[in-house]
Length: 156
Image 1: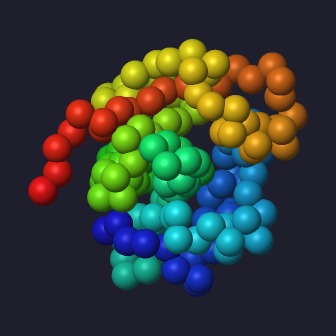
Image 2: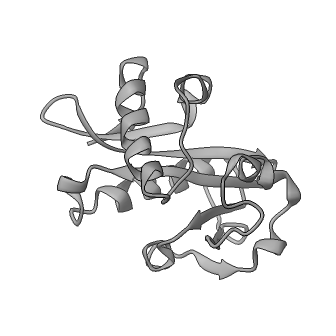
């Protein structure tokens, strides 16, 4: 089940992210960053309240948000947990009226299956690079940028 993250989920979210950050797959997030942005996060829970995955939709600008910190426990991979988390993030972006959602990733095929299209990172506004300054790979980022565009989508 997917739900919005709660205070009691923060340490588990940080551990999930840290596991991927140690491998160089994503940026680490401090407890304070997660607490400050807790409203951005969705979690996938099973067996009552066991958090096995998380993702965040972070608003960057009036028409742009980022899917970030997508992390799924390795023993739960391949069960559509990540897909459902990204879909929850995209749904929230649509409800908020955000026209475009982007992701920076090493797994572009995953996002392409969800309707994202590859773009040149230079097409994204400079405002998004604030996190990149903290990365050990900056400025030689090898992540792939993808964007899902909802600007033509109609909503009731």
